[in-house]
Length: 111
Image (cartoon, rainbow, N blue to C red):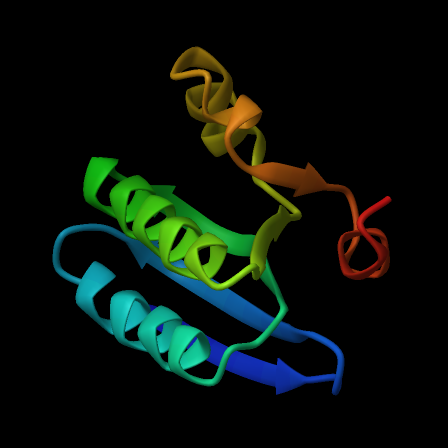
C-alpha cells in the first residue's frame, strides 16, 4: 500500500510518498505530478523517506514528472532518498538527472 500527501509552502510544494512505489501505485503518483504540472508549481520537493520499495515503473514516473516540470521551467527535487533507492539511482546514473538533497529545506532553496 502507498500513501501520498501534499504540503503547500507557497513558493514550493512537498509531495510525501510512503510505502511501495511500483507498477500498481505509480498511476496515483503520475496523477499528482500531472496536477502539479498543470498548476505550474515552480519547485516540487518529493520526500521519499517512507518509501520501502521502488521498481522501474516508479523511477519512470518520477522521470516523466521531471520532464513535464522542466517543459515550463519548473524543477523536481528528491529528498530523504532511502539508501537502497539511492544505490539504484547511482547505478543507473539517475543521480546526474535528479537533484537529490538531504533535507526539504535544502531542496526548497536548491542548495
